[in-house]
Image 1 (cartoon, helix red, strand yellow):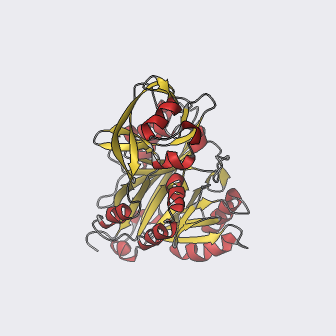
Image 2: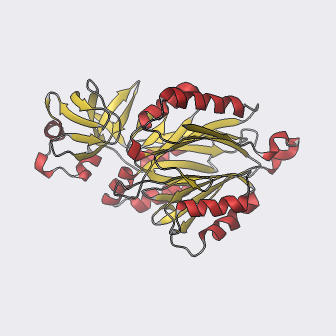
Image 3: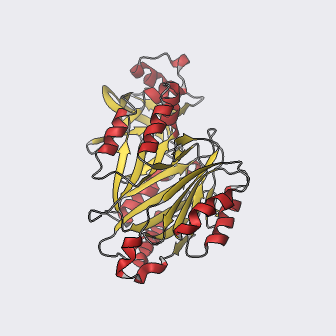
Length: 393
């Protein structure tokens, strides 16, 4: 069953000078094995009187236990939502074995949540009805921005359906999201809402703010002139069996100019498969080669899809250009960055350079096994929501 939970900030009838006292979100990163994580986080968050605290990572005491302690201290007017990750992004850029906490002040933010308890088995009609009820109950306040955040369990493999349903249920709402990860080994993930664990769930956050917002996305690939048609596939398990009527892995190796016997995860990262939607190409990342010579992907695929081989371009310059194109410097960017991008940066010796850029643009978030934006589930992409001062200052 779906469960819809809503909460409005206490300032819904605020005085006209409320906006003048608005605060920007606060991001902090702490070692996952720190002594008393809850106390350290509360020391920074309680002065904000937050409407929402996001937690990313796998603390030693457990995400659920940490969330429960924060809920108890912050009160019912604050949502505490989080998930496990394959790596974190904090005030200094990329970090690992850490917990990132992002607090959204109640003076500037209003939040409602919608929990899809079992995303692999709930009918689309129920999910859509829940989202529409959430939107109708949340309402809209003139002069304020709205955006959505989706945290999904990557192992349920339902992100394509989730984002398409979201796009249909609440049109014109900018939505970003990340697929929760269990470290680097595709281990079971953890989704937590207000101190309770929800395995296999998806959590949607509807957020309203008096700050300006802008969606950011960046993928460091361009299409080549090499194409292939998916001639046999298993959509449910995201496996391509045949490309161009040939065994999928064999044909992929031929297109990439590589030996089948020598294909590695690094090759998949450097030469992803791209699917065109509208005027944009989206990455369909390869997770592994199956024992039968198929390609196991991290995104949905169907027979008849036309795929293009991609090639990498500069991973840092293009990111900086995307950020500099924002109308104003961001106070914070809530960001979801594919773990395959981070691994590629490590292999290229550019992780520290990228960390400096993430810190410069105040990015906070985590490394994912898939990213969601513009009604699409993609891979090897950075997606973010930039929060900026309003036009009137």
